Length: 338
Image (tube, rainbow, N blue to C red; front, side, top):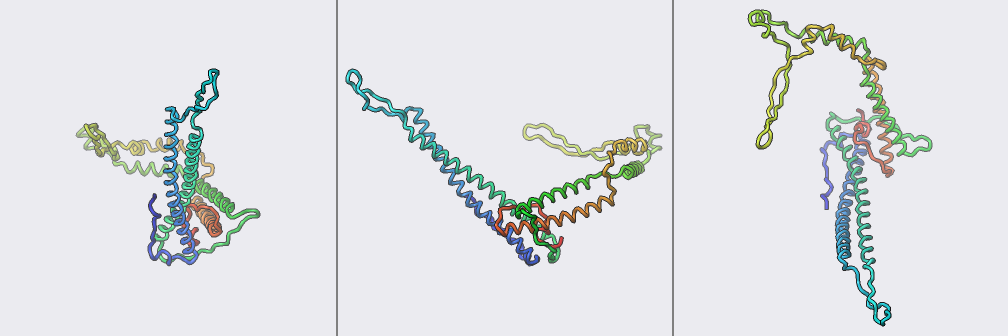
């Protein structure tokens, strides 16, 4: 027996902040989540019963097997034929095959039932998780927004020739994956080498200028060991063995900042070494180009997500067995302005 489905509540002002279509969409998602909860609870009860039957069937089969091995399932038949001396022969009859086969069949049926219910449980669990995750994602997003949300212009879902709504959803999601790949490529595109070199030089020179000069008077009076090199903090974790749990100690120290030393003493050599590691700048983008391209791709992603949401709700309202993406953009799912 499992616990009853969790009844969720949302802030009382959640729904009235949404346009009618958005509230209807959120309500449908909540209903589908709760339906999946209820179905999953019923399946869990059936699974508990099926597992009990399987345990009983396995136990009965095991008992018969042990009895068979002990010779308790064989019997002697006194009605054998007469031998040459006119005596009845004792004819040994084989073990009780019927009882053993029935027990095996029962155990096999019980195992098959358990496996079928487990498969159903997995499907319903995935469905419940998909709707619950999306609803939670949307509700958190709505609570972060200020004021009432405004409806966005949404076009009716369009299907291509010979395409059903589920196929259209898959096609749209493939387009979304392609757009996210494009976005990642733009984010990871290198800077043009000229710009990269300029930034490297600027940072090395800035770091070198931040290093204070040596205290000459201290050096003259105390020797070279008085020279203070630039340093940076270092976290130290020490684990000491003990009779019980190991004792962990934490502290801080300072270590020489080698990069700062090189930037102060030999900046040109350091810059030349760093420049030699610059990658090929094919496909390079300036900051301005990167920002512009990302803006275009983000807009196309949102438009595509809106198209996916329209198709999704058309499918759900028609009773199609399709799951939402838990990371779908809430504005697109609700059909509101981002």
